[in-house]
Length: 396
Ligand SMILES: Cc1ncc(COP(=O)(O)O)c(C=O)c1O
View 1 (tube, protein in one colour):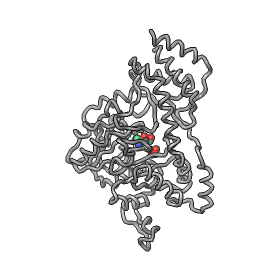
View 2 (cartoon, helix red, strand yellow):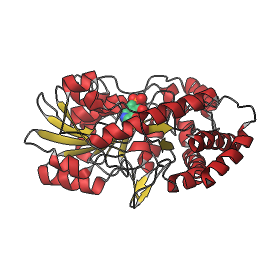
View 3 (tube, protein in one colour):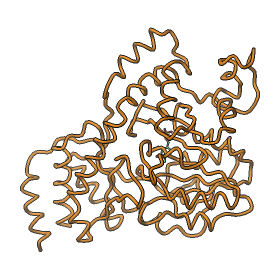
View 4 (cartoon, protein in one colour):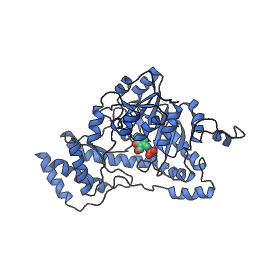
């Protein structure tokens, strides 16, 4: 009854005409455009120039001193990681089914088998117990995803990796700037892949980075990224000509992308702080509905600091979720669902296998809707989103 009264009160507020609020909107936050002109003036638009070195240095600082190599996407960084794991046909890599296709594609492209395990209900990240149970004699690596920017339970995953001699890769596409027990994403495994796609916190349109915490992997990573050649050593004057020495591809972005990215990285703290403020505003705005059992909200696990990458609501079931999304869309607000589980996707069935049933993945994937989150989203718009959502949640 109290909830209904609150709902009617909120409905009054919602009688106001709605603006269109997208889910995401890329913004210029600093000197990205000046940097583009500088890159042209410097006379090098191909990769690995001044701006690339600057981005690598900054990302290294943000990941606790890991070696950073920017790439043209997180997808490319994951493919580099799969090559560095030396995956061969028949090898297995354990990963959550609740992830983007690139995590699995990187493995399947090497002929190896993505082995999908369930997520933890509290964190939506790979369940460390399920990962440990899925290890076989063919397992080569664990790819952990930091969903919504919240680092997975890396300490327990690292234990499993250590016990079985596996490599541990962070799919940190969403997690730049997040920490676990004070340690940043990118320092929590052997390698990490980051995304600077326009939907992420720090953007360059398309873009990514691979970070490496094991020095012995760095030279090979440079070779893979430079089409399988030792061009990086040549550019440092360490060899007098460069040649094809290993498998590789063209994974490096041009300097225009790096120049834009450097402008964003200058403001990484401000971007994270603004997103965290939006996250907190949403969390406060829905707290009573969570207490009343109407919705589920994201919460950082013990020892985790997020980066405000995403705010989501967990609705009752798929019908409730789809009706919620439709209601928000009718009010001009885009609130998309997220991953369709990979273990039941056509390519997941062809190239991977599920380690038993994945009930939490199936359940969460059917109930989740993401709320708008971007740098230029004003508090007044956040309040409109909350009010519009509350109206519906209280009536349904
Ligand atoms: C978990 C995860 N991994 C990988 C990617 C791929 O990133 P990119 O678009 O930079 O290749 C995404 C993109 O959203 C993602 O969410």
